[in-house]
Amino acid sequence: HARRDKNVATLVERSLVLVKPDGVKRALTGAIIDRIERKGMRVIAMDLRSLPRELVEEHYAEHQGKPFFEPLVSFMLSGPVVAMVIEGHRCIEAFRTLSGATDPVKAAPGTIRGDLATDVGTTVVQNLVHGSDSPASAEREIKLFFPDLA
Ligand code: GDP
Ligand code: MG
Image (tube, rainbow, N blue to C red):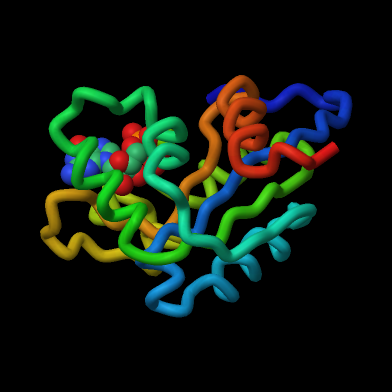
């Protein structure tokens, strides 16, 4: 298998993380933050808020036109989210690994989704968290949610 190179320079990144409405409703915000912090990543901005529709549509623009787009937007408007910016070495990939697969049935045990999310058979997959999927997405999403962050 591929071995990670030694002596890779520190690459401090930022990522946008959302505790989605299912996570807030189930009072899992603390558990999710606990996992982020125990993994060695830091929360550098955080806010509980109800999102305007335009922000959700912009955030998920890549999914416009897909069958789950409208259910996804409605779900994200169904209650407040906890939006945060996390920071750490390779934290974009690290948080995606910690989250697990999009489908909570397939997400590995040990991950946030694998341990805490269940397929509840709704038209949109309720999987507790969002995390930026690349440096470009992280930059775009952080600007969208935290425009005043330095
Ligand atoms: P993520 O980056 O793992 O959150 O997944 P995506 O960016 O591909 O999708 C965004 C969100 O849309 C997911 O987290 C799910 O809530 C939902 N979603 C994605 N794919 C599907 C799908 O095939 N069917 C349904 N019903 N919902 C989906
Ligand atoms: Mg995504």
